[in-house]
Image (tube, rainbow, N blue to C red):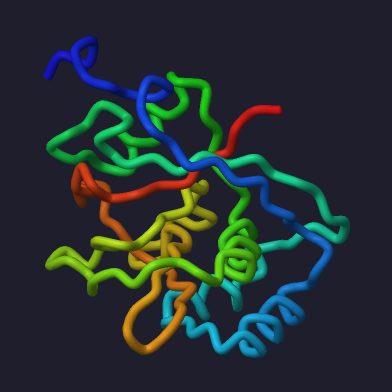
Length: 178
């Protein structure tokens, strides 16, 4: 594929957000998620339970950009390693893991999407938070993604093997440098 002929970031449509992050403990985040009737899957709960997932005591603002895998120059899809490498080349940053629950709490009007695809990676309508994996243990979740299904809002953890390919229409959130 010739990346030069594709409309890739920044020459494509994007969604930018400024998100308030930090200022809540993990327990307080879980309480807020429950208060808003936001569900978590087992992988999401596992991320919250792990001591390597930490939250900032002070709140701060994080500017983000939402892009598709296609917007990064991969119309036929790519692995997380390829996606993250391209994003870095384009000046985008990985997000702190705690962005997932904070963004979920601030993005309550997400449109409804579809269920997971066959490979168990987030499918249509999901937004994956691009973040560094906190543990390399086999089967440990990579990070969070947001979705809305018929049964409500979700903050889900996901596990993608190094060979798993995200489709061109899959959405990712990256940090924008300040």
